[in-house]
Amino acid sequence: MKEMLKKIREEAEAAISAPDADLEELRIRYLGKKGELTAVLRGMGKLSAEERPVIGQLANEVRAYIEGEITRIAEERKAKELEAAIHSAKAYNPSIKMEEAVGSYHPITLVQRELEEIFSTMGFTVEDYDEIVDDYRCFEALNIPPYHPARDMQDTYYLENGQLLKTQTSAAQNAIMKKYGAPLRAIFPGRCFRNEATDACHENTFFQMEGMMIDENISIANLIYFMKTMLSEVFRRDIKVRLRPGYFPFTEPGFELDINCLICGGEGCPSCKNSGWLELCPCGMIHPNVLTAGGIDPEKYTGFAFGLGLTRLAMMKYGVKDIRDFNSGSLKALSQFEDN
Ligand code: DAH
Image (cartoon, rainbow, N blue to C red; front, side):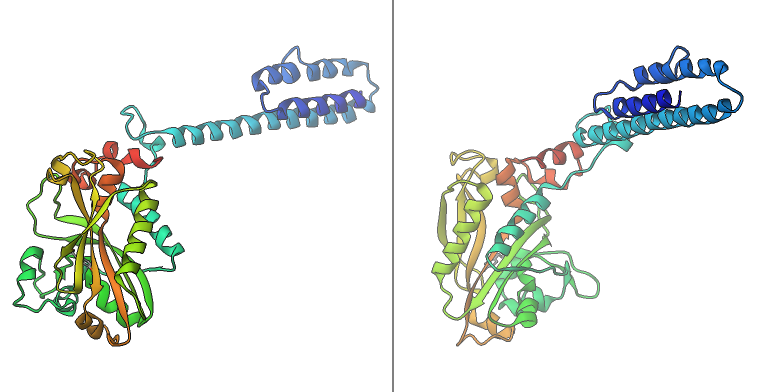
């Protein structure tokens, strides 16, 4: 009998742990009224008085073991099923229960991370910077004194203590130059603010990613190379770009880098103000005054900088027609980008 019990235990163990085991069927087969174990227990009457308690105890142990295993595996399966349901859940589904819903990364975060990775491989460090800055950082250190008309284009929200919500990631240039000195390669993504009337392509809160590379003998050729490499990686295809002269007090010379509008293919639509081109990346060679303000000798070092419109880039990459969707907080709108 001992042998029979041992055999039942071994067989049950193998059957239960099979990945496609029907647990309910096994429960009946081993533990049910007509089950194998029950049959053995029934035969105990024939045993001697000494044997009976020994076999009885053994049979109970086998029973407890099989019961325990079946319950354990059933629970394991339930947990796996729940996990799978959670992972395949889409915020789209209105019938989804809150405890089963799973969040997703914001499309701008996805683009930001991708860029951080691309630039990291090119030797750039990733810096973080404040959203509230002073006038010096946002304007004066960038060669924009108080009377300068360039300020008109960047009205923002002022705090009572004179500080302001930064209008551009360029506001971090000065601090980062002072932190590292030259040579320097850094990118610094960040949230920016402007007092804007909102429409399909303007928001009062948006993201930029600034980059700087400062070293001896840095030229416009380096700037073009890095911009092209980065954009072709982001879009995973060859995209058209054009460089126009642009004016920024903190660059000399300054450029506007445009890319072909990927939403309309260049024909003109509201997202590109019907021009077929999207202003994506203003850039330029860093003005000597800005280097000096950052404690870097402009006689020895030169550098380029760019202020990539991260929000714009996300619109292009994911075909989002209205910039306001990004701040809408609508899970339905925001959760669909993760797998792209
Ligand atoms: N900060 C500028 C803006 O928001 C963009 C910019 C232009 C950044 C030229 C730069 C640059 O680094 O070199 O309009």
